[in-house]
Image (tube, rainbow, N blue to C red; front, top):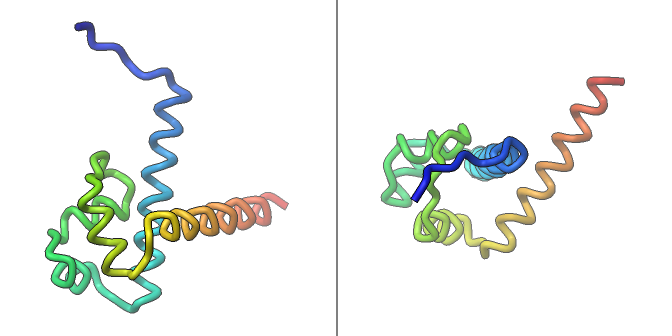
Length: 100
């Protein structure tokens, strides 16, 4: 099997996905007034994993990890990603306002 690189557009979309995932997790944590340590303790996850997820640099998100976070926030996966859509729209609007 050969080691093929992803096309740049696909790699960019993957990067955008993980950044959006991280922004959503960060938003939800701050909305609850929690520190990373508090969230880690409550979900039995490591602070490092949560921090890397929020920064968008953790490129492996297991369904169990996403499930733990959704359970903690009392959200379905669909609801979680609807927050992500709202954050993405708000970010785009802020960027457009900055350009104007």
